[in-house]
Length: 613
Image (cartoon, rainbow, N blue to C red; front, side, top):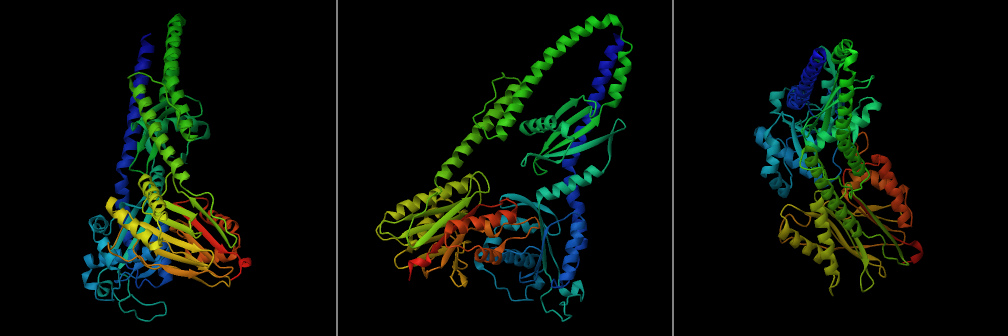
């Protein structure tokens, strides 16, 4: 029995040593990510040391290929001292976004290379310049030549920028592709962006390639993505179910979780650690228990037959303990499956005040919050119109597709008491519950406005502007508000913000309606919301879409853009608005591989050719 006791002590000590080594290795992964970014700073600075004029495409794409070889499949752009775009592998298609990028570049040049301000005349937007110089944007511009993690939009990104000194300090290398000298047009500002998740995956590949050992045995590492509920670096398929449960426990509790898995093909110690700083990945480490099992086999050979009674008792006790431990794990597995299946009414049973009970209580609280979110989503779906006004002279149809459970896009269309047809397309800044509430708030204001005697789209836009300023100084609403007169065939329309309606004529000619106007909620408080009148001839169409359509990217990070959208609209043109709308949505889904990073709204109005003049 002394041998048996020594075997148990040795097994425990070996397990503790292996578990501590695995835990330290996983913690070092999270802590060394900053070192990874620091090493990358030097490589990026060396690759982008001298981009020349920024107009030599061959040189630019060579720089881009060098970055990609280092694992930085990124968005790269060069700009001159006035912020004008010289090169980008993924240029902005929205005029507003391009103006915003130009203001950021100019601000960086003024701060780090003031001697270059006079090279070119700067024609910026005064409002955007003031916005960029606020504290929250200036923080981005305090760390030149350093990779930094910033939050732009819904997802965090890794951001890097560099400001180049005077041309004379760089040397006379700036020349156009034709060989002509460039005056003041040389690169002054470089910017690099890539998603945080992609940088983390590159870091994982580098770490996995480095051999780690424990007890003279190699450690193996895997990574589980909580957001997509999938393995980025996956273990063997026959272990994925148990290891998924292990990763979920570490995510829910925020603590490392250990599993001693004793199966011949992969017997060993598994440990999982949730790392929110590494794009919310759960890291899993594995180490074989070969020394432990070898010693155990030798020890069992020395145990005499007289110990069978003791082994039987230990077996019975172990079985009882096993059942008490496996039951909570089975409950957790059922909870995970309910979460995957969106069964938010599922609750784990009360298990007392121990650690398991606290875990079950935390899970039930999470399900309560998720149920409230699902209820909010259902309420928002009820605010989206499913039927549009019918008219003998027009076809009208529209659609909203949310990027997440709650969205900030707004769509409304109904017939007024005088027979005219009102429609509204809006895009609230941001995402999530706050934007969804602003969307519902805008619908309520629209309803009260429609009951008045004198109706004007400009009056509605002004009322929305005043209401947004009273409630939230940081939220704005891109807006298209219009009234269609189906008898006289004209549309009174007001356009403000990042939404530009497309007037597509029967003969294929087109024009975008609107300009660089501040949206409701920002800019001057006394700004004038003007109304433009657009006439629709037989066969003409009016298409309104939010930026979630034209800014969608494919696997090569290319945006659809306004030019490609016009080509799609012409190729799939149909008098029936519903058929036309479905064709455009299908093209969008194929381009983005059914993935949406932003809410998408599309509204189409076509005048029937049979309706006459």
